[in-house]
Amino acid sequence: MKYPRIWIAAHGGPVKVAQNPDTPPEILWLLSTDPDSAVRRLVIGNPNVTPKILVGLADDRSHWVRASLAAHSRTPDAVLEKLGDDSVTQVLVELAANLNTPPKTLKKLARLINSRSGNSIRRTVAMNPSTPAGVLAKLANDTYVLLPQKVALNPSTTVPILRKLANHVNVVVRGNVARNPKTPPDVLRKLSRARFSDILWPVMANPHTPVDALRELAEDRDPDVAERAVEVLDERGELL
Image (cartoon, rainbow, N blue to C red; front, side):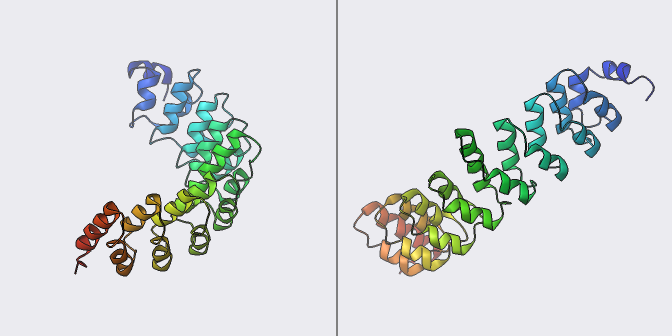
């Protein structure tokens, strides 16, 4: 394109052009150097953005641009790995949440233990379904209780970890195990004998809870628990 800046002005200016899904990559490349960080962030979200443009933004001076890059589903692995060394919490949190973040980068983020920001990053790693099982196992053993709570909810948490967390002293952890779709029936049966509503209600909501456990809960001394158990049995067509 011979006069790109004239083209940009004729099509509504940098913001509108950066948002436009029909904007060609060569124009997006030019806008990726725009002095307005909001424009550069819009470039990242444009469906026509190229890997070359994303790589070029890896060292952007705005941490909001780097955070957008860390969250993007098409950011190249090499850039995601580089962002793992960023010093800004928001960038690292977005990176920890990205399903495409490389396993070794998630492992590195899980080690950030010496600050409040480190805890927020590790919580996000614990929730990411792409986090490796070995990392989830370590986070499940952490004394910072919000980590095992998040691991217990993670759909990628393995059954051995869920079995261990089912014995956790924290009620919320055990309740989250009851919510996990991978929790096996025998563990749900065990959890159904708890005396905490934060555990019993998720147990009744889990489709893998055995019918015999639900029938026991239908006789529970708590009328609300008993009523809900009867409703679940009826919904499953198991009401006698």
